[in-house]
Length: 217
Ligand code: GTB
Image (tube, rainbow, N blue to C red; front, side):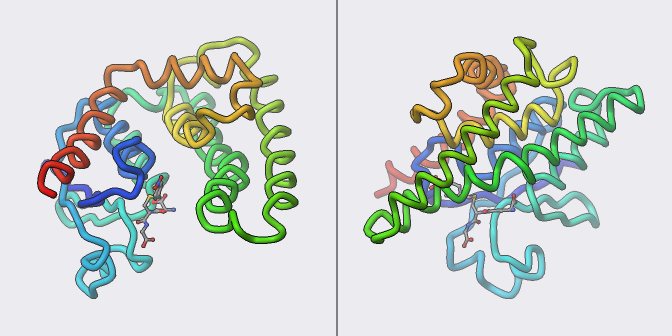
């Protein structure tokens, strides 16, 4: 059965590959699973029919037969568990790859996401610089720790896994900042991951939605 995912009809990221359906597209591409996409307006995402699918009214969702999922991390895990390519077969290595998925979303992402929100929503606030400094310090510490663990390896734990996939989608939010550029190994890690053919296909597919929207205006 071909799964259907949801994505923004008009993404506020303007085709930069930052909206979270990118993670799901990338995972599907890595495992070679064809998929369909249902594009949604912001208004449609808040309608009862969609809220039944995702109570938070957000993209992405994933539907396959009778199964409906929301939360990009859970969707990536589901995809990785169903088809080979994103999780090792050996039990301990598999558990560690899943650990890295959680580390990406629960330990590295929070300050990175808070910073992204701050930059968009709070630039005019009197406390902006103080808050930015606090978040940047937290991010610097996480990146230092991540870099130390990566230790010059290509991937976080052996072969590329769903842990790397999620970690890279988080680090991409720091592209163009001195925070990431201070770590050439992490920049190279992101570049290595985003050069993967599966990533390129996922990015191009999401970008095509933005470009089609631009042409229609
Ligand atoms: N925890 C959920 C998950 O991982 O699936 C979070 C999903 C989520 O945040 N979805 C966002 C959404 O639907 C889109 S991706 N927002 C609409 C709403 O809440 O009403 C987040 C996102 C949005 C915009 C940019 N951007 O412009 O750069 C980047 C990422």
